[in-house]
Length: 422
Image 1 (cartoon, helix red, strand yellow):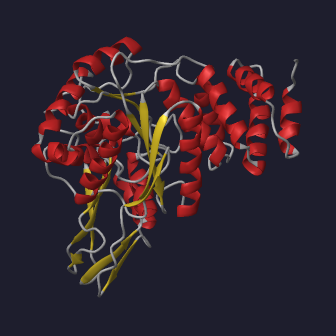
Image 2 (cartoon, rainbow, N blue to C red):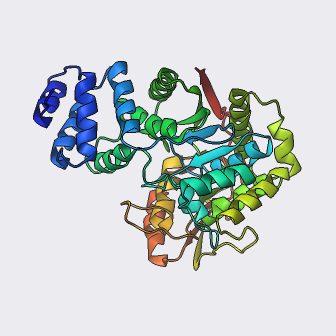
């Protein structure tokens, strides 16, 4: 059947349901440049406003998978995906930990945009490390090291790569069907045998409420099941930054602390929780908490970094300028808003406003105090790192209403809020 882009747009504009044939055609035609950017923009907005049924979303996902290659691996594999947050360096200790426990991890990751950090940006602060690998290099590293964190190959879900860039500049990112199909098309095409999702909830996440996050998590799991994937989703709190480091090199340093058996309790807790789910889906019995505490996973990390040209023992970049934010009074830190800290790190140079922007390896925020901890007037509360001192003013503005000190400590909140199994 012959299609026209305007007919597909009208169908969704008027609240109709797209046929499988329409979806297959429009995704393929857009990928090949036969549907104009302004037409796909109109369709994305129509989907944003009118939604898609589960059948439409599942077919949209399949069409994006079919736009490129589908990878396969010579060993059993399991992967993890996070919807993005502030201080979310979990992939860095998680991949080598799961590999050390006996399951290979092909983690094809992305770069940060806005206040959410990118795994590849963090790793590129390590001297010599490279993000781009061929499919053969990824397979070889999985066999020899057991873990690889790298950029997606150019042939992986090209329709999604093109559509994501368009959504970013047309105000259509925050749409559950488009988010779910974007995530799952890449992850299914990636070829891992099972997948664990970390769906963030709170001010520093795309999903601000538990209800919205649960809707997204359920959609992701359902799409996975429909495509024969074993999937578990954890809903985790992102109202407070993860760990004490937010940025690039500072997060790598914190991840290394965790891999050596130390590090912040929340980073350790979430790393172990996700590793437990990944190992369970892979059918492997192991104690990731004990393995992490032993420091054994650090050896896998060092081999993983070296395999991609990095020097795991090299000194990480240091900022040219450090500005300390002091506590204004004695008491307890009652609140530290993830979004404010993320925006501050972004303005200091740790993130980018456009995909074409570069990032500063040494930029970021170090949180000396986390909610529930006591503070003393004049003691360091936050430490701002940047190579551009002029950026400090904007970062401080972002932090203006980010923290609150009270006489009594706040009631602790759980990090893992819910789990959805396939």
